[in-house]
Image (tube, rainbow, N blue to C red; front, side, top):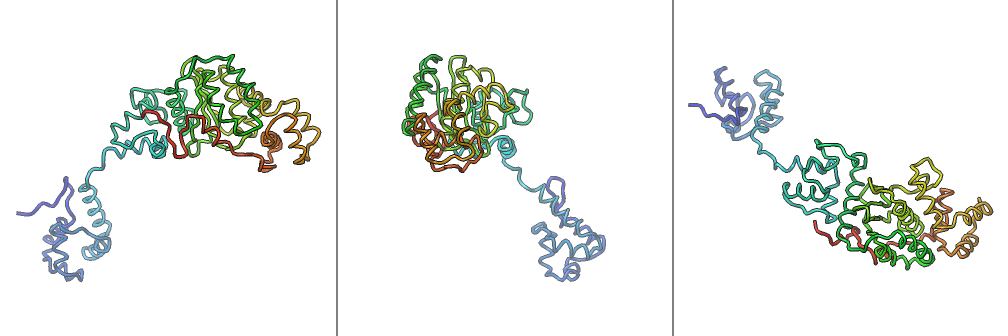
Amino acid sequence: MSIDFSFGGVPHPGEVIREELEARGWLQRDLAYILGVPEQGVNMILSGKRGISPEMAKALGKAFDVNPEFFANLQKSYEMTAAKEPDPGVARRAMWQAAYPIREMIKRGWFEATDPDLMEAQLMRFFGVNRIENVPHLPHRAKKTSYDNVPATQLAWLFRVRQIAKEMAVPRYSEKSLREAVEHFRSFTVDPEEIRHVPRILAECGVRFTLVETLPGAKIDGVTSWLDLRSPVIGMTTRYDHIDNFWFVLRHEIEHVLQKHGQKVEIIDSELEGANASPDANIPEEERVANAAAQDFCVPTVDMESFYIRKAPYFYERDVVGFARRVQRHPGIVVGQIQRRTEQWNFLRRYQVKIREYIASGAVVDGWGQPAPVSL
């Protein structure tokens, strides 16, 4: 009675070789002699205890006068059939990672590393849906949404901002208070340390403010979102950690809130520089409005135009510092406005002081090794 070495219907190569030996009337020792190997080695192949190496496949091809690929493919087919089925979660994790930087999100504390079923539940909770097919950017999603045109990394960041904002307790939003706060913020533009008061003042106006580190490749500067028509949210990244960028992006997002932009579809502002930061560029009207407000806040437009016309193209440091003192702004803010107009990003760069440590001291922060204290 012959021994069946097949696995799932695919025979072990040794079984095929045994049949070929019988057809030719050869013994194991005959094949060992032909191959120039010990008989024990041939026996282990024929008994299914050893596979066929590429070298042996070539030797068998010569011995039986067939293409060596025949034996190599026999071995490959047998091994693939005999191999254990992979973890069922592999395909699901690959699908998620293909759409979102899941590993980075786990590292940041947005998700817990757990089994696929619980991970799927976390994804649905994170994106506020009740079916995994409704998570944007995943294959086979049930229907298209407005989020399909938002890059996945930016969308993940946006939902983290919203997740944090939902757990923040603030009074009812007041447009009047926010407009007053904007005027109050002007007094903070001289001393960088005063920035620490911004989150508290925004909260008193009913605006949820959070600082969330951007995800790799997202290039986000800020976002304006609404949890409902009375609950505005501003998220920022401080992607460029300097004083001019902070005040420009913050005032830009505040204007979106004041104009009630983003109530239907969140406004994610990325790469707020160059033409994207201009009030005159060919960009959406709501962005031009926000840019104009931000630009005028950083340095009053009339004063900046006058200074620029008088001094361009030669902006001496003493003139810049003197102008900053006159308009009561930190020199780094004036430098930033000149950089935006001239696109000479290294101009007087030393005045662009870092501010993240100040804003982080008063804000709900997520990132830079510090996950926000929110439930998963």
